[in-house]
Length: 334
Image (cartoon, rainbow, N blue to C red):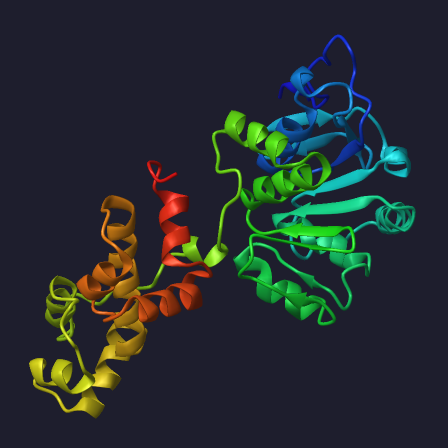
């Protein structure tokens, strides 16, 4: 296996003198999450002047250390680097149930006590949770780990909907890419929106995403092809603007309303009302990013009836308004 040294790229002629960001390196390192951290905080940015972040990697255990993708790794420094860090980033963790070394927990608590910020990406939230610093606070992690985090650490309020959370210098983010959102927010708070936007442009990502994880989740909308419900689903999708009712849908399937609702849940896994709302939201999302219709028109086209109802369901399901969704996902909207 190749030996990959994780030090940042060569510094500019004048080395930065700003806050020291230290990223943890461990056996089983989440390569993507570490790479994001090094890219954002470790890449030379001489255009920002001397007062920019310094970056170092920190091995929290003895080698040999491996990273996802078949890489062997060696870090700049050992665990003592945590004693001097201004920002400590936990780029994922080995497994949700993997033990957090006591020495690491103690160092993180001490660092936080002297004023350092602690940052986790994705499953790295389990490391911060193990320190006790999240007790009584709200934290997030990838939605697929939310129940495990809640079960193991019941004193933490787990928010599986947000992209990131910041509470008293303890910062957690959702899935891997949400780490970008959190780190851009840290830059925004440290150096202002102009520099955060500049970093975002170089990464070719939005400077600030609206909403939360819900807008990226896959909806379970499949239906067993042999189900008697399947033809109805296609009919509803073609005519979403129609005022569909349980009774009307049941009649089209030649069933009683009670039988229809039971058969629908068996076939689709959702109630008819939840499924119909989801289909209307999906259709509205497509219209918002491909067309220029106003909100009242969009609402009528998909069967919500009014812009108020459209906004209500968008905020409830996705955590953002239809207008914010359009601005986030449509490139030609200023």
